Image (cartoon, rainbow, N blue to C red; front, side, top):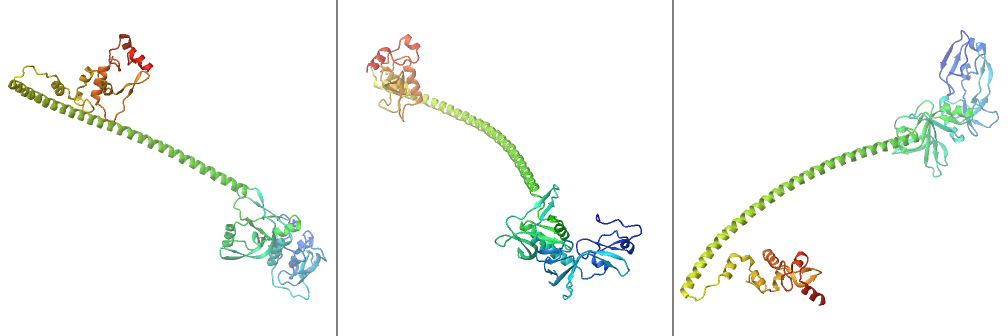
Length: 446
């Protein structure tokens, strides 16, 4: 409405459907025409029926408003018949009013007028314009409201009414951009009277092709201006690439935060589980220790009971044997008194009687009294084998008992481990000395 001229008082203005397909035209009253204040009117307003704004020329669509006479043969978009150019000129209406009629195209006198509507012709002209003109399409992003350029990648060529198939459904693209292999890499839909909706729009969006929809009048206006700048009505992109990248980064940040929170929760739960496990292990350890102590006490009590029983039995046996030996002695009338010491050792200290080795059956004390080197092996050492001042331990899978070893070490304490002589007072003060001075010197020379 910005291009409308202000009417004088009393003039009437009404809007009728556009015949030429680019904007609504004014039907003016006689008073307005007579005033001379209006721009050139549509030919159909003054009674011209076979009048079109666009036709096909040698180089594509031709607009009557910018046509230069003598530019070549003209052809109708509807029937393909020959067209002629009628330049803008004044025209007298039947009412006697003189009006300026803008330029238009009509069929040649020898060519009958076709039934194609001006809307159809305007749509075809806008579609064919993409084959002969280069357009720069902008589209406002609904997220950031920035105008972005919609570009078709690569070196392409435009074709019209191209057959396109997607997931078994056949379509016709108003304008298709093809690469060197005739593959569709972009598309344009021209909206004049019907918008692209439904399954076709959905399939174009799902295909991933860069495509947009533009008004036919927008295309014609860009050609008239000569700059090729058009604005898309709809674009296959939901948002611009920058917004898409920001949304992706936001999603990644959210996923990272979610993962971090989940990891933190898992660590807390794992720490709690470890704490519960440690507590359970501690409780189990205390219970196990209590059970072990109880079992140990019971075993010790059983051992003490067995020892007392054994002691009672041993005492009874000893008394019985003593009576038997005394009776036998009296009967045999031995002249000498019987030596009860070996018998008492076997009866009273059976654990100190050797059970293995060459001195099996002998008491440990008797071996010490005889100063037998075997006493050193019973103590757990090798005879005359030293590592510095320390005696080397004896290696034997079947050795004396612990009681016998302790008794042997008690007897050897404070004595030389070679000659078994008692150490001097000064040597005894040094607990690490295990040999007397003569034996130590003798070992050094040997």
